[in-house]
Length: 268
Length: 238
Image (cartoon, rainbow over all chains, first blue to last red):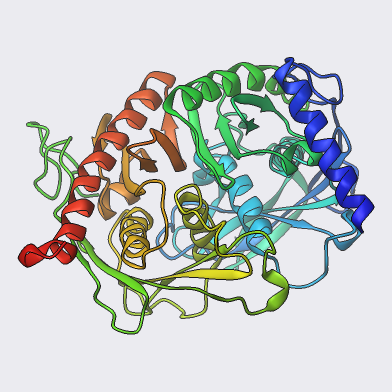
């Protein structure tokens, strides 16, 4: 116990020391992401799926598409629900049970990025207005943690949506019925890319690892769309940012996001 | 769809684009709490009560080196048009977390090891921007409780409505507008401690929206100070 606390403290000091020389503990530049690998269509029973590795953080996402009732105030739109969870096998500290505030925040930030960029044209998913629509359920499971779960889950969710095929439903006897053998591509309008940055002292670093997150002062996730606009944002952590830092973060999110978007576009 | 802005740039509730809603804050409204405040921010009616520093339950949450801060943001079932299930929703849990993280940079809890400061927020009536209004009340209530602080946290949202950047988004504008950006700011330290965004902004609009929100925070800060002075410096007491 004591020895692990000492090692944690030494690691922290090393991370801070290196940052002051403009370096990171894993040799990356301050604004470099870890290697991102994306595999799609890994779960054939899902309508779309992806397995994403961002460094050692690993996420599996599945998309299920099925008829559902619309939200009461949004009868002219299909349903989109993105969830995220950290499986107990992902981390020695993770436990089964109801989600804590961190996991709820994770799921809501992933959902917000996809919803607010209007990645999917939900108006195309209506069967009968106010009564019956198509629901797209995007469920992400973290299977190994090493920091920056926000971006890993977001990329996995976006990749799974890009790779999905939408089954066709028709109304028969007032109820939606599956039309066998007919599928279409999802109504994609833009590709959202989230970029998470940590502030450690005065340094802004992109894609923090778990060790770096352990010494960060504050965190920010910025999601941009294909047109270079900023669409969703979430600050976290127990300290703040100056205006200059936030403006710099938005520039970083746009430039780093462009590279990731190219990688995601290949999945279409 | 309601018209959010007329041709003269007047918004659906009669405000101009750079005008905040009426804000009034009263400090020390709950007898049993160690600190408290009541805020009316437009149609928002919100109570905040502070308890602590006090013993931590459950004990394993305690920090041997510092006090901890906890926050519960809760909406009353009657606070919105359709009755809200009283159990905490995922939205409320997320808001509780971001409010806690917005207050943490301001409070100094090092001198209270193994204790907790509980921030309880009850939204009695919700309008748009309830998380900002709740934060404004909580921040003042923390001062009222005598918690050592680096600065007061002031919060206000800005957004994009009818293609214009506007200050302090109301309920209709939040639902039908193009973007909503709640911001919390420590005016003396120049630090942003809460920031979220729903909606689409260009980089230029992003900068303008952030600056507009900070302008709103500074206005709220003056109201917060006045509310505190009203309680503590009235009748020549100092």
